[in-house]
Image 1 (tube, rainbow, N blue to C red):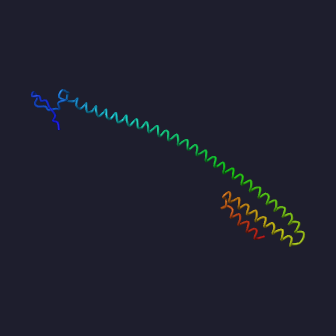
Image 2: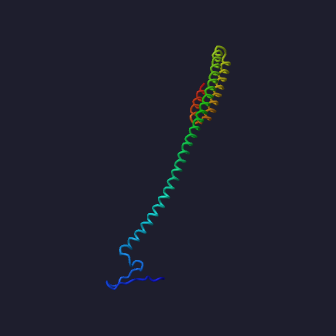
Amino acid sequence: MKSKLTKSSSRDGIIKAPLGQVNKPLGQCDLTASNQSLKQGITRHKTAEVVLRKDGKHYTKLLRESNHLEKHLRHLTYRLLSAHETERKNISRELENEIAQTLLGINVRLLTVKEAAKGNTATLKKAIANMQRLVEKSVRSINRFARELDLRQQVPSDRSLLRASLAGS
């Protein structure tokens, strides 16, 4: 270990200081250390500022990407909902057509029953049985469409009412 050389002054007593600071005023040593500390702090702050700017640019880019993906997701959701709505409309039209045909068939059979009621009861019972089969076929069609529409939970109560009314005939 090196020893520090000192200069002494006999006039005021002995003052010992490092050789490099003998000619400097006493407060200048503190200022040099303070300046050095400030320069290091400024360097740290500038480095942190550069890092924060890079992070800010990165997060801005991520935010733009996120907004773009959100917009794309909204568009896909809209397309999916539109496709579902189109499918529901198609199923609704099919259901309406099938029910209309079935009701027309029931109406024709009712006209036949009306004519048969003028004659014998055996023909009347046969016509009523045919209409019941037609109604049961309609119920099966409605149930098939209901499954396609995923409305099955609403149909059982209608089905049970229809069965009860058919059992009472």
